Amino acid sequence: MNNLNRREFIKTTAVAGVAALTSPVLSSEIASAQTKGKTFKPIAISSGNGTKALEKTMELIKKGSDALDAVVAGVNIVEDDPNDMSVGYGGLPNEDGVVELDAAVWHGPSFRGGSVASIRNIKNPSKVAKLVLERTDHVLLVGEGALKFAKAHGFPEENLLTDKAREAWLKWKENLSKEDDWLPPHSIEDTDIGEIISKYTRTYGTIHISAIDLNNNLSCCTTTSGLAFKIPGRVGDSPIIGAGLFCDNEVGSAGSTGRGEANLLNLSSAMIVEWMRQGKSPEQACIMACERVQHRCKEKRLLDEKGRFKHGVTFYAINKDGEYGGANLWEGGTYLIHDGTEVKKIECAFLHKRDDK
Ligand code: ASP
Image (cartoon, rainbow, N blue to C red):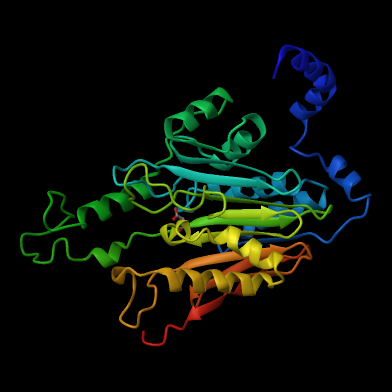
């Protein structure tokens, strides 16, 4: 910005600047003006671990909150919960026993996203992702830089590793291999040390929420501690815009949980929104994302004896008309919907039946 423009800019934005510091990204009043005072039926979708988060999201939306503020306040409940070991505080750590979090947000009306990846010691990465959107000219901050940015905005550094998560990590490490020096508690009679890996399967887990507010604006958020016991620095799909979430205020919003690597290779959330733009229902679009993951996987180690992709990935979508859907590669997945009255658990559409188990 040259000097002249800069002066002009400061003058014209002085009033707006004060408002920006005190109100949400796009205040409900502005959004309401855009929709000429008409109110729309709100709806919110989430992964199966989001009951309380959806209740909070909907409570705020009904009070007139912008959808982005509402979904972030919703996921904060799960980030703060030490018993959800897949998100935020209490999340399962990386290979070194350190919790590293990923999160992203998308604000439909302003068509802006923000995200953080591999951030340590900050309980609510979704709030930091929102600040990346609001207070930087960037979209994604990672690791050290993301932590510094959060601290600059007053976030306290906290130890995120609960005893429960540390014990789960220790069990995983002790049972990882017969060829390293970590051993679980055992007696001198034991012969199977290190062979019970499956008992401590490395888990995935995440929360995604997409929502429509009273002004028919869409926003979404995905936040996670990522793959348990990952290589330090590993980033999953959750904070990658187009993969872990995507939204177009004119079309719909989508997000994912599950094996992030598969989704990173397919940018499924962006594809789901595009398929909805072409007229597919949210559920059809989510199933198409599953088919694409299946079709494009050529690595035998990831396929079972029938050639089916072994891992689960779940997709969630809503469109501008308030229709919703979810799908997983495997039967048995569920998602949650808040339609303004209550939270409902719904079975995901799926590609593969668990026929041979
Ligand atoms: N998708 C997340 C990741 O790969 C994990 C999950 O959803 O379970 O980091």
